[in-house]
Length: 119
Image 1 (tube, rainbow, N blue to C red):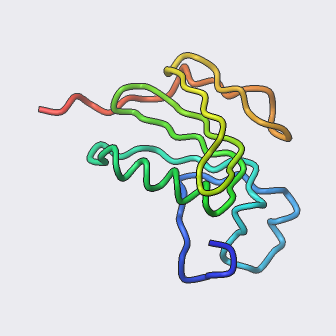
Image 2: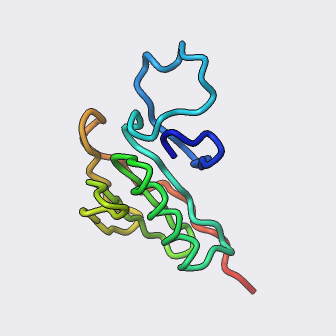
């Protein structure tokens, strides 16, 4: 969280500005991120996913892409305000994710893998 180095998340992927590569700080300010990506684990529950989403919104990450290999779906969360994302776009693997500026137009999801079925 901004202003608290003891409260931070480690996303599966974070897209930062290119000038950040010369920055010595080990924690990135969530406001700097063009995109944060979280991949839902096979054992994660709905509450855990919701908690992560709320955390990123509270921290001010402009866009969060949640990928769910359990069922082949994605959710793009945008416009954080008051601890919640105001915009949510849902899709399935195979459908492109329209990325927010300054990123390229869309992300191809047709090659994303699914988890093996649980026994």
